[in-house]
Length: 295
Image (cartoon, rainbow, N blue to C red; front, side, top):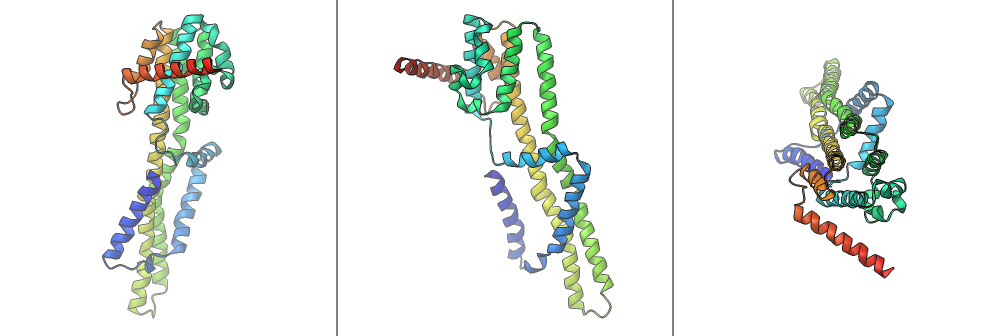
């Protein structure tokens, strides 16, 4: 929704201000210049990226509608789930959660968090490293190195679409100049015998290319690249929260302290207070106990 609102503000501000100043939208309608600019930008995008980056860029477009995927409520769910799993492992032994992580969809613990079950990134990261913790063959340092390497690889791959779109936005003003120059060349080639008013209109049409290139670059494509960057940062922050909590548990801290490590890793705007998190976990325990009694 914020993307649509932002683009609407750009269009209304630019074209509304132009019309309020007495300008006419007619001369701005130049479909051939749009074809030159957008076609050249698309061609450059295809030429400068491999299949993985191109596929990732178009796939990312489906996630742009989300204003904030990992919010405070989501982090509370993640911390509560980790607390339950780590508490069960500490109480009954690490093998007690083996069945939970092998079949999360059939686990009563994971079943209390359907929103997390629907997130492959969280589920894969959490279950993979809990499985390694169960094996007991890796030190905390080795586990941390592996987590950092995976997060770095994820961040590099997730940044490809943003990097590709940033390069397109950098090139669009130049393609706008190309379209404008071609329009000027066309105008000058037809200058002989043309009346001044016709010449003025043709030059105005030619200059639209520069305007369109700059508008598309900084009003549309660059903001999309920035939006993808923000989403990647959100995902990385979630992985860091998972990492810190699991490492605290491996280092011998109690589940209550381990989730506190994860809570402290969050940004202040999304970080629940210790009391909020404690009440959230307590309420979920009460709901689970009530459901068990009813069954």
